[in-house]
Structures are given as structure tokens and as C-alpha cells.
Amino acid sequence: MSQPASPRPRIADRLAPFGTNIFTTITALANQHQAVNLSQGFPDFDGPEFIRQTAAEALLREPNQYAPMPGVPALRRAIAERFTRDTGLPVDADASVTVTCGCTEALPAAVFGTCNPGDGVILFEPFFDIHRSSIVMAGCRPIPVTLHRPQHAAGVGIVREPFRFDEAQLRAAFASGPRAILVNTPHNPTGKVFTREELQLIADLCIAHDVIAICDDVYERLTFDPVLPHVHLATLPGMAERTITLSSAGKTFSLTGWKIGWAVAPPELTRSVRAAHQFLTFSVAPALQIGIAAALAREAECVSPLVATLRANRDLLADALVKLGCDIYFPPSGYFVMADIAPLGESDDFEFVQRLIATRKVAAIPASAFYHTRHLGRTLVRFAFCKRPETVAEGIRRMAASIG
Image (cartoon, rainbow, N blue to C red; front, top):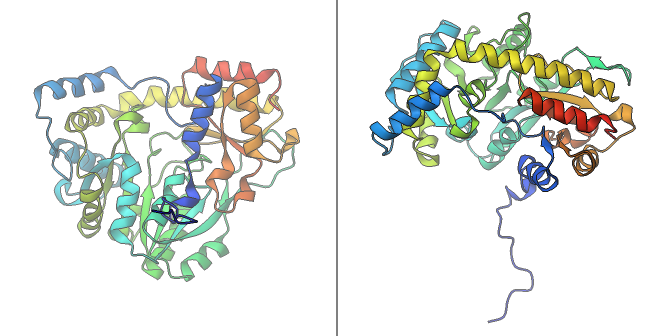
């Protein structure tokens, strides 16, 4: 039988533009060149031993069959109590909490469960790549609103002003008739913490245009500036009934491989999330859920030392990048620092990162991968500081000879 002259592509049209994600690509390059990996956002250390011990004991003593689809009851209760402490909002653990396979699954579950093909979904660029891919896989239209980097003269060093969106662009996005908005605060990759005033504008527009808010809050505990606290969008007037709040244990407890996340939402929106969740993963490992329930009971003692380590690493890396000639946008939260390589005479983030890996044996992420409008990120590179201090120091040492 003869073959067709031009066989149809084997990958679906909606996925073809994404290719292999940037994290897989850069980590493979890092491994190939034995580079210090300051690219992907995972710690090179494990979370507290008592959490792992609790999960290990549960693995041996508790059933290892499917967990309940919404999540192990003990974990759902712990999440509900935590959310109420944070927000003052009452939460029914049975009707309003869903445990997911990390926030990586919670995001598409929220989008698939609430949006129809053709619906518009607002998101802020730069964005975590799963934000845009979740929208596209749902057959929806991404409506990007740009977080503009603060204006500064090249060579200024540390830029402390935050990335900001243009109010007119945001209003225009809402005027286009979206079904939902995806808000990520604290923000990956910029480290921006949205202010109460910014969130109030988003809330006002959600209410005026009957838009659902999907909030990715995975870095909620990892803020470094007490003047910029994390604010839950659901706490603003009129938003509790239209907000799905997503978070996870991976970043908070340095256990990213466990993939334990959750969605907290009013019952009607929870039903939407679960309608998708039941067909995406159905449930996640019960022993790991039991471990995270124990972690949430002792969260403060876990988070304080982690935040101190991250803050020190951030300061060390930011200072080193400035000394090497970059401008950096000083992050008040999260795992990452964004460096502007334009002062080095560089204009292509991908070329720069490939050269950095090959010649200096240090891996970072070209930030244009996080933009719908790629040219806006062409001189930005994201470095991760969620590593052991000695890992960050080694990366700095390798770059010190010549970062360019």
C-alpha cells in the first residue's frame, strides 16, 4: 500500500505550537553539560523529615488503593481550616475542597471545569507555561495582559519597582467578554506580589463583567517583604462566590515531587473543578496526602527556616548578577530573580542561556518562553535561587569569570 505524499501531523494542532516545554529542554541541556541547575524551580534538598516519615508510615500501614476522588478527609479538613485562618472565610471541607495532582493539575481542572471552547480567559504575561497551555487545551482563547517591567536606565543594577499592568489594557481585556481570569500572586516568574489596590480593580471588573477568577497562589507562604503581604482575591467583597483558589504543598514544604495540590472554591465552582478532576487524575497518592495533612499542622515551623534560606539566597544571587553586569528586578517573593542581560550587550535570551550552559556550566531559563508577545522578554533571563546555599554559590563562582 502506498503512503500518502504528505501524512497528517501526529500531534494535535492545539499542542503543536508548544513543542517540548522549556523546563525539559533546559534541564536536558544542563545535564548534558553537567551545569549547575539554576533553571527549573525545584529545590535540590528535601522537605522536613517528619513529613516524609509520616507518609512512609502511612504507606506501610494504611490502604494503598484509590483515595476518595475529592481527597483524603484529613487533608481536606486541614486545607479548609488553613484557608479559614488565612481569610476568615468559612470553608466546608466536603463541599469546597478538592485535592489534585499538584497545582499542575488544579489549573487545567479549573479551566476545563468552568470554561467552554471559544471562551476567552485573561492571563498576565509573563506567565507560568501551564497557565497558557491549560487555556489552549480547553479550546479557549488566551487574552494576555502584559506585566510591564519598570522603566530604568541600563546599568542601574537593582530595580526595586514592581512589574505593573496597564489599567486600560486590563479593562479592554474584560470588555472582550471573557469567561475567566487567571491571577498568579505571588507571581512566577517576576516575584511580583499583587497589591490590594491591583486586586481590588480585578475584583471590580470580575463583578462588573460576571467573570470567574482562578487564582494560582502556590507561592503564598514564600514572601520576603512584610510591607507586601499576600492578599487572597477571594477575601475582597463579592469575590468569595466567584473565585477558585489553587495552591499546593510542593513549594511550601520543598516536596515538589509529591505533586499534592488543591482547589478551594464555593460548592458550585467546586463541582465544576471536580467534574474535570475525576477524569484527569481522579485521585492522588493517599500516603502522600496523609503526610501533607501532618505538614499543615506544623506549617509555621517548616516555612520560617525555608523563607530565611530563600531570602539569603536571593540576596546573594541578586548581588552577584549585578556585579556581573546585569540589571535585576528584585523579587519580593518566590523562587526566582529576573535578570536583564541588555547591559551586557545581549539581545537574545535563548542564545545567551545556551552559551551560559555550554561555556559557564550554569543553567537558567530564557524568559521570553513565558510571554505570548515573545519580544517583550528577549533580554530577560530567570535564575532560580530555591537551592542549597552552596549550589547558588557554585553557580556564582562559575559565572564570575565571564557571564557573557
